[in-house]
Every structure is written in C-alpha cells, then in structure tokens.
Picture 1: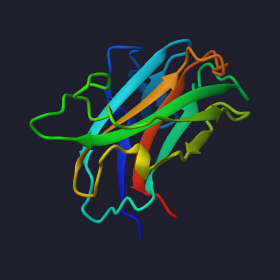
Picture 2: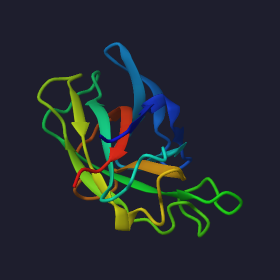
Picture 3: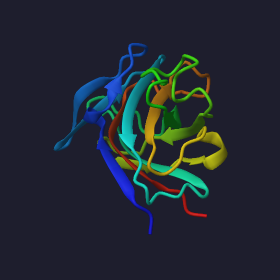
Picture 4: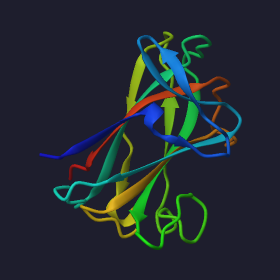
Length: 173
C-alpha cells in the first residue's frame, strides 16, 4: 500500500514569477489560481515518510478546476511538476539556482483539458519517475514545484486554472 501526503492549494508558497493567487473560491473550497499567458509557480516542502520506497517514482494527484466565474470549457492548459531532495545545510528554497533541490530533477509536463461545465473538478495524475527525482529517497525532505507553463504555445486556455489540493504517493509499477 502506498502512503500519501495531501496538501491544499493554499498551503503552498507562490514564487515571485507568475504570482499565482491563493483564496480563489470553487464551490465550498478555496484554492490557488494560475493565470494565463505567464509561468506561475508554487513551491511546497515536506518530509517524505520512510515507508515511501520510490521504486518507480512519485505520483502526484492534483485536484484542479476551471475558474468557476470565467469558465472555458474544453480549453487546454499546460502544467509541470518537478520534485527533488532538500539537502540540509546546502539547499536553498528556490527553483532555479545550483543549490535548489530541483537542480538535478526533471520536470514532467501534462495538459489539463477543462470540463464542459464550470466548477467541475479534475484530478490530474502525473508521475515523476525515480530517475527524474534527483537523489530523493524515502525519509528525505522534498521540494515540489507545480507550475503553469502559460507562455508555451500549447497552452490555449485564456483563463485561470485553480489548484485545490495535491496528494503525493509512491508510483505503482
């Protein structure tokens, strides 16, 4: 059985670039909105349980929704997920420097296609394979970056996408 870690979108830290905005209502929940035509980045740090083996990698279940006030049914937005180990005494809390926990990791991208009705929830499940996680192991502190790649030509969604939660677990073989 895989052990999971759950985060709400409001528990993540917006990076200065792209500045996603927290506190966006989707029904009875609040999440963090990623704006179009920009690269919006959220960073979160947590300790992986010792019981996570990372035999094949980590699966990220991202609970998302189209902006209920300005829905764009069927539109496509491009997102990426990256994860890597935090090395105490060495790592910095950023996603671009040589001392970033993400420096030896590879981003996995995926397309979010919004449903035909506003406020309907989506669960996207990208998997970051073990080789793309730097030297991350069970029991390590980990940094995860979730970002919208809104400047990419394949991102054709001209509205906000709201992240409501993230669940992290061992990838199944």
